[in-house]
Image (cartoon, rainbow, N blue to C red; front, side, top):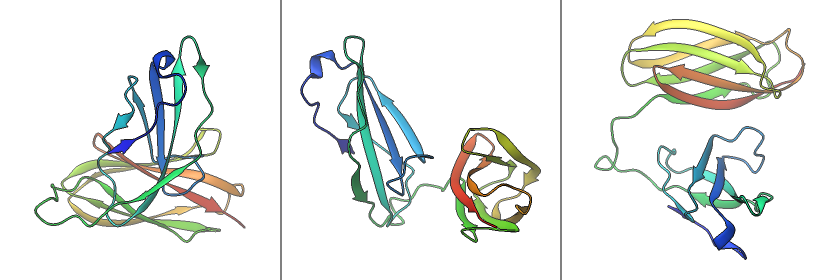
Length: 173
């Protein structure tokens, strides 16, 4: 549960935007939420034993959109077998970081699903789409050739059924 102080004008705030990421760079946040003015947000689906950063900003018709807060930090605990629901799609690893000629994507599917891998650049332009097709439950590793891509940061999104998981990839030649 994330909680924050409403600050100086809670009566003028109608919405809060919250971003969560594994780094203090929020260029590609792993999650973005909006609340209806509440200063509490319950977050689920995070990896155990992982440090996360989050930030908030207020919005309202009379005040416009505030600047983002400074980042806050928290670390998730260990999930026990009793707490652990059936896992969803998991994007385990993208390596090497940085990549030059190719990158490897490791992911896990808890059940059979249609899988696509999407890559966008920092402007949001789709530069790669892999229609992998139906995959059975299990662990997978796929490669993407990055030799012709310009150097920079990319968002790798695993689309499996109705699930999305994303991580960043840096390409340097």
